[in-house]
Image: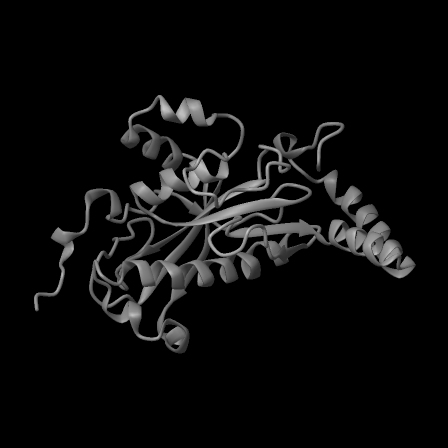
Length: 257
């Protein structure tokens, strides 16, 4: 039996080069309040599907809650890109087949500067270039060897046939990386939530909230004054941190931030 090669992978599924400039995530990358993220392969299909999912225009039912505003830092596209182990920044070389030893997990904010209709008017390649031209953040330069038990050998020989399995594994690993390297380091700190709307295949890949919002909701549900006081203290802390936000991330009156 012949092993599938790169020629059996469609152009839309072939991995794109990493953005020319990758910077560490700042401690105010995600916006105030609840936010959502989509984890996708760093290729033409993955990036386009991710943008439409984040704008609630995807064909699939896996979308962000409509209550989340389309503001900077509230809807985050998270991508994974297998690269050659010897790659050095800024010229990371994508790896489409064979042993996968290193994967870049990256993120960029999808905001209201463009609507789904704006993107739909663009040719797919132009839309891809537009998204790749944004500011991108290196969430983790992931070495796969220490994760051998988690990846169960699948990514040790990436082929066209194992891409779906690889994608499922990377969705979990990329979510963990985003939680550890972004959400837990934000000021104020965010908490990863489980989106349970509709069961398997529904809801968004990554959902988070500020700890103040989480404990406030818990206090209302349980009628517990301790959680209410904790939520109030965390909210007060968040107000002091808000003064440090850059102008384009400063919330307007009446928003969710």
